[in-house]
Figure 1: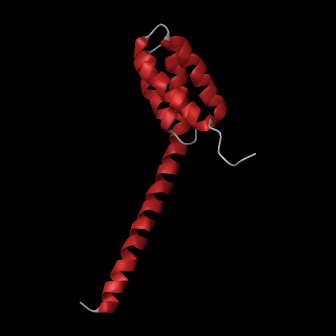
Figure 2 (figure 1 turned 120 degrees about the vertical axis):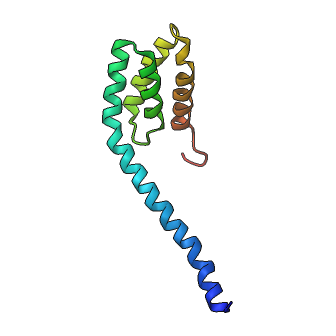
Length: 112
């Protein structure tokens, strides 16, 4: 194989993979933005009915949604923590919320 062709393949393959990754990332961000409001409404409905499986399903989806706001996270934390005392099935979701809260609340080294 010619050296020039080998160099072109070597440099274009990572560039192509990077482009595909950013396209995937932008689609995921768009999907998360579209799903936030419907998932939040379903989560609140499940909370008001104390439907444990719905709380777990939509709560987990909301925790992994990158567009979740601080106020929504606070409401989730308060409501799930209260319900977790009565329902042990919510322990996993409680841990997910706690870990997400820790991630948001961490102190970044080197910032005043």
